[in-house]
Length: 289
Ligand SMILES: Cc1cc2nc3c(=O)[nH]c(=O)nc-3n(C[C@H](O)[C@H](O)[C@H](O)COP(=O)(O)OP(=O)(O)OC[C@H]3O[C@@H](n4cnc5c(N)ncnc54)[C@H](O)[C@@H]3O)c2cc1C
Ligand code: FES
Image (cartoon, rainbow, N blue to C red; front, side, top):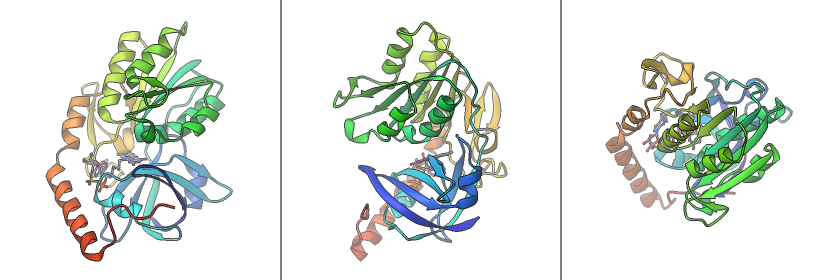
């Protein structure tokens, strides 16, 4: 674990920020599907974040962060040049990349950021990459241009039809799969409920599917047991056995229930944080360069 500097910071939309962080060893070692755990300060929470990209020559890794609670909002208030107290990683088992043939890569909301390095690696491995990039509304779509560079086709879907085709991730998967003679594998990353229904659709269509799970994590090394998920009836630790798993085997209802375990405490922490911001006049969102 070492301190890291925020080299650059860019807003990708409401509450979503892309950071390039100085981490030369990680930039060399990371593989698609791996993540880091960041602490903003010594007393800070440990925040797991997927490595969305890396530049080994510049010695930086890219993180795309949605401000959803206290720690991610604190991070949004940091400026270029700020120091993160520590960053640990790369963690987790890398995504299995092979030459499947034709693959669907479906990213929902912020889930498109962790999908990007996977789509890129699948493309480099010689797969035909058909991407489905979805969000509730146009302003919440992230990394569309990046996905276009590493995909043979990109289907943009928004729930409200404000950009691309109107419909859900599952509609996009059905559209793409329906016009292909065969789809050999699917990848889905996004909110657990989206991965649950995407996996149900691909199960019906007979397409093997990999999902990337985001349970609550603390140590990220398989010691605390916090990130346990049930896959194929067995308990697995997402931080070391995953975060990728067979979407057709995951108990998504349990994952969704466990994610809400600390909702009252998270709400209280956010209220306390907002109160502090009001007193100091620093605002909850910070400036985004
Ligand atoms: C492997 C992995 C990769 C992730 N990658 C990204 C990413 O690239 N970009 C991104 O924006 N988010 C990512 N997340 C989710 C991110 O870690 C949480 O949004 C963040 O920890 C929320 O903290 P908070 O204090 O801001 O919000 P809180 O108010 O504390 O929590 C808001 C919600 O975030 C989730 N959460 C809270 N604490 C944790 C924790 N320690 N571990 C996991 N989830 C938590 C819960 O669902 C909670 O309801 C990832 C999570 C995992 C497990
Ligand atoms: S986060 Fe502690 S075991 Fe996975």
